[in-house]
Length: 322
Image 1 (cartoon, rainbow, N blue to C red):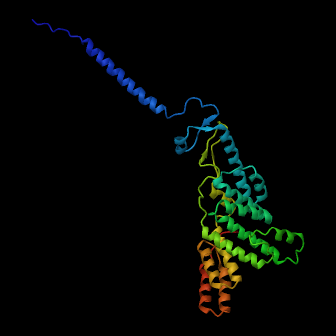
Image 2: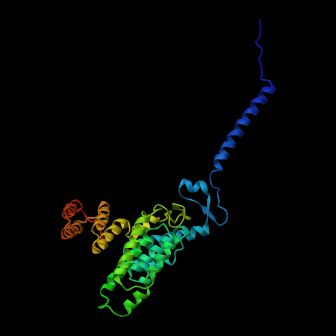
Image 3: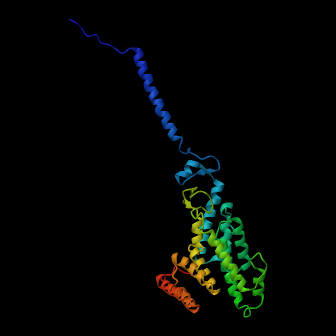
């Protein structure tokens, strides 16, 4: 009779299994620690706060300087208030708030544009010209300083049309504040010719570039430092352009050029610019009717018919007061 011998594992096998188990635990700990290393430590370094925003932000920085955050947060709130004031046509109040804002060099020209527009609405010719010239110097590819300089010259020329009825210090101040580089001029005709050149230069530089760029920083979302603050989206160049009421500036520039060229009896050129404005959405029924009348008076019957047909074709809704 055979008795089965009860076998026990050898000591070496038992130790080997134990070592393999410990190795597996160690490898697991390495992976967990590696993943945890992507998270923020329990407490921030001195003077730093957690970054809250897009994944791109978090991949580039784990902490934001608290002093810089405070400045950016307050500036963003001010910019948002400025936008509201511009949209409400309270431009002088907006200009007062702009003095609290320091934009980076890349977007500083937009502050000058906004200040120029505010001064223009307040008929402060000299200040408007100074800000618009500075904006053009800071950003040579920005069309809006030239567009608004043309608007400035046209407003000035309209004021000078009745200079004999408005003689006195107002005219003297406008003469001294001439924004051109050629020297003072009190001739409305010259001012309108300069406005034509400015408008054409603006259109050559069109469209506005960088509309999606942040005015303040490269960050889309400004992190919240404490639970009481909400993350803020820093206003963009495009949002400022909209707040200034310049979304359709190209259509307006073509329309104004058409008016100016019609006054100079440059009928074909006026028609070209009105065609551009109509393609951009303006309703120009009355303008084309006047153009047709001018063509008939000049003996250009076929051109008159074409302009009359355009008065029907492009007689849609007007985009608004530009």
